[in-house]
Image (cartoon, rainbow, N blue to C red):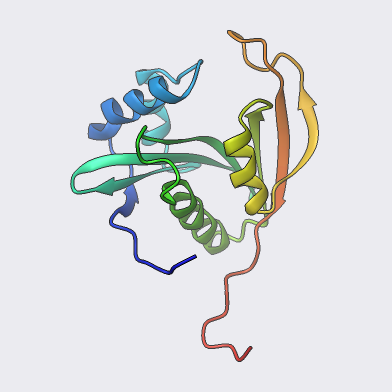
Length: 163
């Protein structure tokens, strides 16, 4: 794998981004979040953190997390605009979330993912997530089960270490 700097930047999501987030939600998920849900989440900066990956003025991905108690992060939603999958957008968003979690002293993360979403599951496994259970019929429209995944958030990589 070559080491290149991505062409996008990660920034906090803003109200003005909601139409782009809705577009990605509708393209990616059978049960997309609504406009009001996303606006509420973006506005709740105390316990939520929504970020976007923006490339040349276009939002190509986003991530929403919720901080639970003082040591837990829950991944609420993550999506990549069609045509931008496989470029590392979701990984960049998760890397940013991990850095923010570490800064808050958060040690563990959890999420639910559709059992059929093999691409997302593979991404989560690369981030150390492991299954701990199944939520039967979790998704209302599809009646699909969701895997419950947990991961320890690793310490920040040490710079300048001798290896």
